[in-house]
Figure 1 (tube, rainbow, N blue to C red):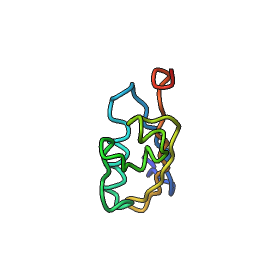
Figure 2: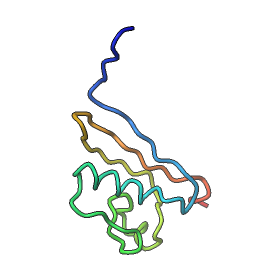
Figure 3: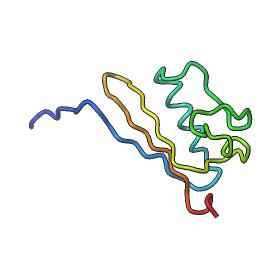
Figure 4: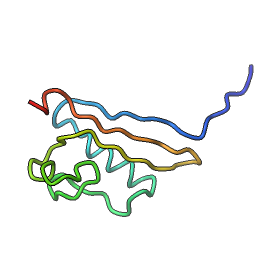
Length: 88
């Protein structure tokens, strides 16, 4: 059996229904990997995933957000998507 060699980067999509915790998951990933020093909260209006003033006022994502972090020598590119229900 041949060994699998990992490449240096991974793409990750965070997708889920309205109010399912996508922004919280993004904040947790960034916090655990050391990309941010303090995990933000949607209710405190200080999250990386909802950085726009409109998103913070609504306390929900209003656009696709992207972030990157490194963990275990692998770079992760994370896209935080909103669902069609959130945009109506």
